[in-house]
Image 1 (tube, rainbow, N blue to C red):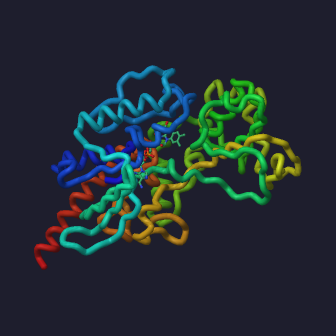
Image 2 (image 1 turned 90 degrees about the vertical axis):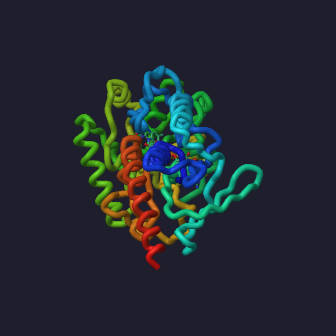
Image 3 (image 1 turned 180 degrees about the vertical axis):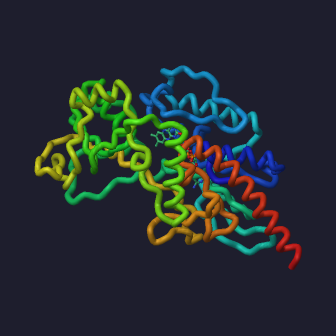
Length: 358
Ligand SMILES: Cc1cc2nc3c(=O)[nH]c(=O)nc-3n(C[C@H](O)[C@H](O)[C@H](O)COP(=O)(O)OP(=O)(O)OC[C@H]3O[C@@H](n4cnc5c(N)ncnc54)[C@H](O)[C@@H]3O)c2cc1C
């Protein structure tokens, strides 16, 4: 198991339930120094009451949490407790550098991981479940020109007060961008907002049916080997009284797309120029799949061709992706963990049978 975020922990739990023992016939490797997956890096102002909803891990509820506490701390505690309760023995910080195919007895894959103090470990595995999320791969679109000020991505954001006295351009049409614009507004930071297309405000609730429809649209793409689109392109943007108020006050009003970067700011597509000190790229993430490059599973489109179960990788039997495409939410990740564990157990059994009948 590679990665111990929501997807990895769920898969690890179901693998244990299927009879595997961590440290004996399975390993959970995670690059982070602490429990919490990507949540362990989220900024202070993303308090628990600001998250869209966190689905429970299997067989253990997150329980009540202080709404004003940073979500990062709540989730770190929850995942840490879960790892202990379920005896998952997560190995960290171990970053998987590569997964290659081998034909060595009942092993299909050689997994090489880098750990503390320059240590390296090599594992042979009959099946690999990869749940490495997106946090390591922030996406920044290319624009002509060169900006002389500070640039950062969602990953590097800490607190709005770091930006007081500066003029900030927030780029991006997703939930993080909206939260940044509103946080800056609360802290009195002079802010501009740019989106590539007009903001896609959602005028209906995001209920179970809407969630299922989004999942099916994403699955249709990944089953065709296409790269998943941005989250907001699929879900639209939720509105709340605070968001509607910020729209009314002209705070959450997009200046439209950027056309080019200049030394002191940006040119917008409408021909106007704005001087800014900082550009915060809240322009989304791509799946973190670099360690799987030796397997050659990427299509020319940049996506990975997924089977109809949405966890099996068509071009690499025995490899399963969780938290990818359809399962890139805490709910989807939890469900995908169950499917991947079941398929991984079946794949190793099939392999054992094939070897013993040679
Ligand atoms: C700002 C933001 C807010 C979000 N809010 C919500 C929300 O409110 N509700 C929701 O459902 N979803 C939300 N999401 C999506 C959310 O991140 C996912 O739902 C879920 O937490 C991702 O879980 P994961 O296990 O797939 O990935 P992650 O949580 O990213 O876990 C992946 C783990 O794999 C490890 N890893 C990566 N590469 C390697 C490697 N090569 N070797 C070993 N380990 C590796 C990482 O260190 C990490 O611990 C949000 C996303 C963002 C960016």
